[in-house]
Amino acid sequence: MDRLKDRVNQDTALTRRGRFLTTTFLIEVGSVQWLVSIAEGKIASVTQGPFVMPSWSFALRASQEEWQKFWSADPRPGSNDLMALIKRRVLKAEGDLHVFMANLRYFKESLEKLRSSGAAA
Image (cartoon, rainbow, N blue to C red):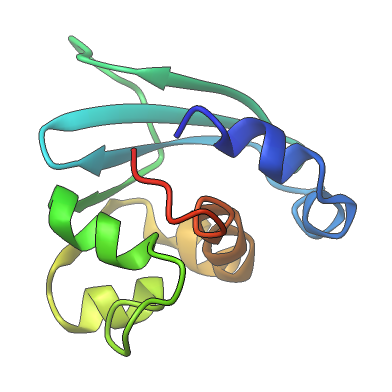
């Protein structure tokens, strides 16, 4: 997760796609929580919890094993896409899902940035 900010912010096409997006969302990898703040398509910060009362628009929660499958260099079908994880009921999306769904491609491509080296959180 530490590399997410640099990898997303270096992708000009991705940051242009998210230029109207400003939000903070929570990503939970097993028991570890991360707050990701986005300002006009660029990731402003990635902060590791634990948090007492985090403020976020939506949360993506899955086990560490499922995130590792998603972030593997060549994920198998069912683990290759955020919506596939939701369909399999291993990823829970909570909160204001309008923000998530309206910018779904941005979030998919952003979280896939950790995939190139098979990095895990």
